[in-house]
Amino acid sequence: MTVKKELDVKEKIAAVAAGAIIISALIYWGYQFVGMLEFLEMAYG
Amino acid sequence: MELLPFFEWAETTFLGYIGKTYGGVYATFGQSLHLMALAVLGGSVLVADLRLLNVIMKDVPSKIVTEQAHKWFRIALVVIICTGTFMAAAVAQRMYHNDFFWAKMSALLVGIIFVFAIKRPLLKGSHADLNPIVIKMVASASILVWFSVAATGRWIGFSG
Image (cartoon, rainbow over all chains, first blue to last red; front, side, top):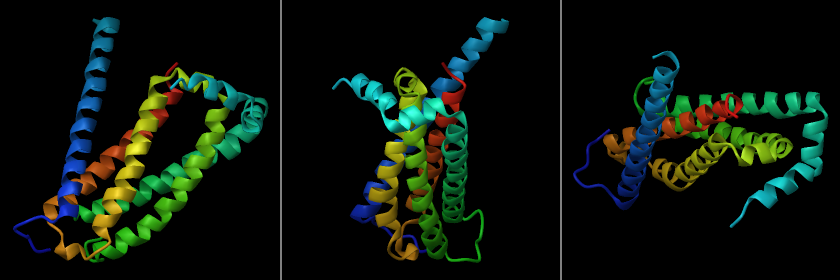
C-alpha cells in the first residue's frame, strides 16, 4: 500500500465515521465496565 | 413518536402468536437460525476486517477477501433481521422496556449504515490507492460496532 499525502473525500468521511464509532464504543463499554465494577463493589465490598 | 403501541401490536400478530405459543418453533426457527446467522456475520466481519488490519490471510489480496466476505455478510444480515423480527415479536413488550434491546438496535443501525454507506463505497476501488491508516480505522470501527451488536444482543438474554 502506498501512503498518499492527502485524503480524498471518501477517505475523509470514512476516517471521521470510523473515529466517531471507535470513540463512542470505547465510551459506552467503558461506562458499562465502570457500572459493573460499582455493582460488584456494592455486592461484595 | 410513541412506539409502545407498535410493540403491543407486534405481539398480537401471527408471528408474535406463533413465537409465544410454540416454544419449539421459537427455539429452532428463531434462536437457532439467529445465532447461526450471527456466527456467519461475525465470521465474515472478522475475516474481512482482520485481513484489512493485515493480521490474517496476508497472501490473499484484501480486495478478494473483503468482496467474498461481503457476500456472506449480506446473506447473514437478511437472516438475522428476519429471525430477529420473529423473535422480538413474541416478546415485543418486554423488548420495548429493555435498555439492551435499544442498545442493540442502535448498534445494528449504525453497523448497517457504516457498512453500506461508508465501508463498501470506500473499499470498492483499489485498496492500494487508499491510506492504510484509514483502512485500519475502518476495520477497527467495523469490528467494534459488530462486537457491540453481538454483545448487547446476548446481554438482552441476561437482563430483565
